[in-house]
Image (cartoon, rainbow, N blue to C red; front, top):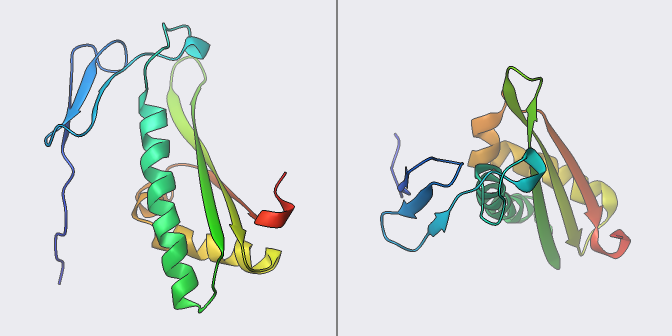
Length: 145
């Protein structure tokens, strides 16, 4: 049996990623959008890749905490960085991604194992499985450069 716990609603208007605006139904999220300067756009505002990376890194952190709790591992710190890359071959577009996990309080093997387990728990990770190539790099906090 499925139980709906929360639905986030965001509406985008205008020109979408090229100068449009987005706003959540509760008004807590409101941003202008711009094509990044790296892609020939004006830059200066957020874009869909940043928004996806923000949501995914936050969600993945929760999944990592859940994985650690399930496996009875106490982590002293967690940092998750999501890199979401828009790729093109000139006629088509696709995403690739990398998750960088830095955690303290355990060893390298355990941090990598927990990150891989979190990838099977996180709803964002589940949503893109089989569609977006993802690389997961996990390190112990003391070894982070």
